[in-house]
Image 1 (tube, rainbow, N blue to C red):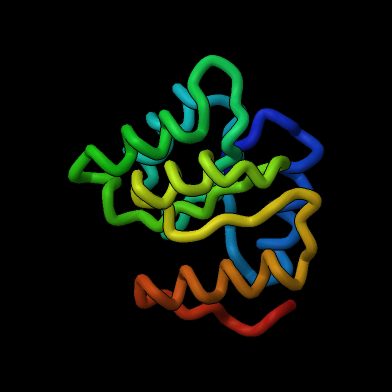
Image 2: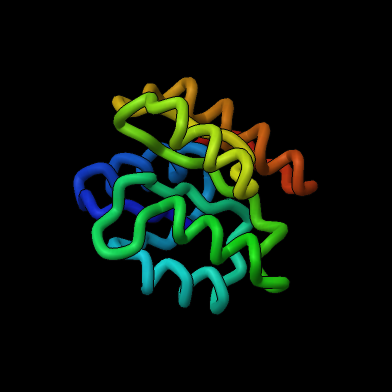
Length: 126
């Protein structure tokens, strides 16, 4: 599941996942993200830290408190490498982070690593 308030970035992340033969659910806001995580139980969540209304860190905290979503790995996406945000994200249970602008090779490697950590192996690229 992809969570970012920027539709252009969501499309870019979705295209990266498509190359890896992964389906994605695109979500533009925090409230929808929480509901979609409950409904779809994604293998992985990519979550932007800077979101309107509910921040990515607040979304992460809620996800990790719920029994139904606490074991879903969350990859935080940030445009600013603020140490306090990253420390908070890891304390709340983030699996990893990636910094914008996102390079496809870094993105792919982190996705593969996180999915394999939950026992999911990707098919070969298209």
